[in-house]
Length: 233
Image (cartoon, rainbow, N blue to C red; front, side, top):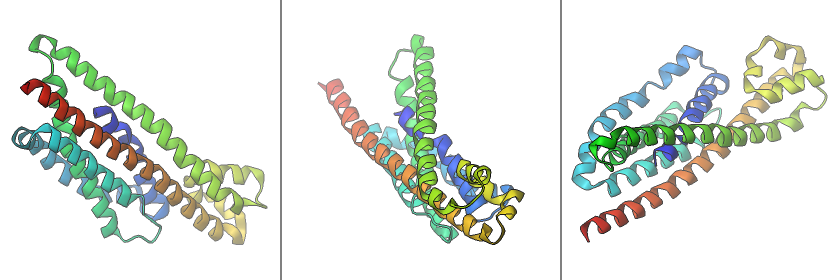
């Protein structure tokens, strides 16, 4: 479960920070400040999640956390260039709440599944699953974002010098570079099309991530309930 939970974490920050800078026009510092509500939700939730899991049961708390993350991704996948900041905050809040509810109980469940003398093994399994999840998330969701961005932007670059078109297709960061001025009157159109293409890619990547998280929530609920029933038998 920790692998699924972390599969979208690195790409999430990569996507959202680029959106805040290159689509909404914030500075790097402004983008970081816009993300500050995330730890304000995540930290107290993560601190209290183990108590909730002990009270309500892991089979309830962890799946709810994964579903909350899925809702956050679904909402963030609807972002557009003119989306109000409050809508972004709602998606961010759901994501942070889900991370807090799913994260610490999952780690506790893994480490407590083995006797004390094998806690090192449990911790290693937890770390490996997180690293694998991050690697797969970056590779798969990053590829989806990149392909969607290029497919949406390519038709708008007809007539540009090949080198400039290649740079525009390689990253949305090109829209803030001095080279964009070389496009002349077409610069504003290219910037607008690149932003639209990027948010389309963000939507595709985050919708896939939300489906994965919903699937994981169902699987965790069923497996945890089955394990509990086996222990009680």
